[in-house]
Image (cartoon, rainbow, N blue to C red; front, side, top):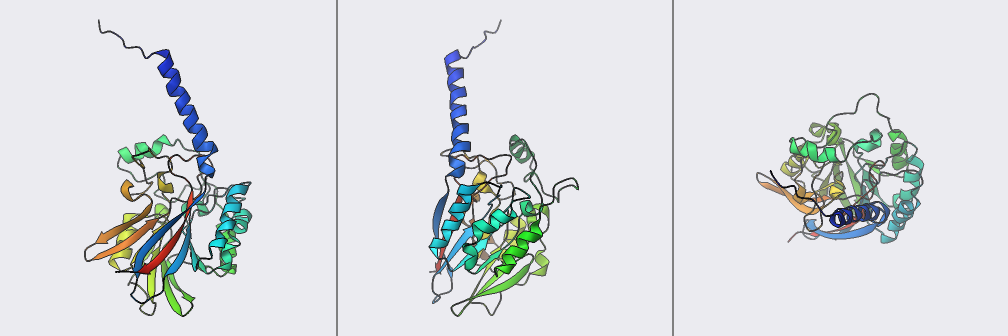
Length: 312
């Protein structure tokens, strides 16, 4: 007869206590441990002055999140040259006024935005383990298509109108230009690839030839979007969506990205290469979570102050 190995009761209790402590930390502390990450990116033409860009992403605002609102408001003290919002502002259909209040001081600066799937549609309760299961099956995230008709539709039009009234540029499958102290900053954006709203063909053709520098903006960093921007010659692409993995393993990193981007580039600065072209890629880990999974572990919420400098 095969002997049965019994786990000592003390070890079982210790594992349970450790797991409980981790959950308390992830849900009670780290998810509200907002911080600013500073990154220098050498992507400007020679002779151009440095630019300070504040990137905010994946706010996922739920009514009553006062600490998050105050922290976002405080970022105006950084005095950036301009702000880029890479989407998923909402996780509550009633959250538009609080998003606009939180970003109000930042909307005093020039800015631009794209939307993510959660700006259009309310979140659904899901088992987080499904992200790992979908990855094992070779799928890329839990959406991948526009949600079904029974999903809550968020009032994204109100959010759009608030941003537009402040003068922020709507980059939904379009391109526009920011004018800063004599500089022309070209911005090209596409709608969210995660729910197949991206229409790169509408903006294809490369950077604005009259701009001093141009950047690509997208919510979810799917490879088809990164390939298109890079092949067209954009020196920098800004994205969000991944939450940095959200629940990460210390000293290892993220397990999933919720898209087809590899986990090595789930957050922060990296590069993306196509034949003959290489672009800098910055993916924000964002500052919020889906309202049904309000936890972060080894991946604190963030905004990013990007200092863009001339390339060597």
